Length: 97
Image (cartoon, rainbow, N blue to C red; front, side, top):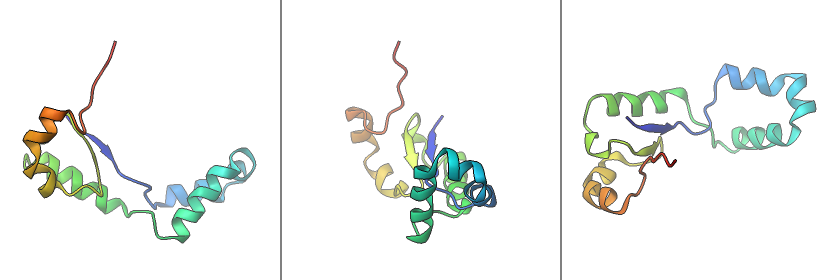
């Protein structure tokens, strides 16, 4: 089990939401932030998230099981620090009751 942060993904769905009248009237600040991200090149293609999912499904990052990972994370570097990440609880998903 992993939690994956795909980042802000540029898709037709995002475009249609941002172009809708509802977004402009109900959440103009959010629309502004997304437009700035798009204009600044801060969005990601969907393929980035897909590559991360494939890597995780392959088992190559099993030592990071139960971790929160993002498309910008360097899996090779994180795997080299897997013991430290486990010991310190970095990136770890937890359920508290």
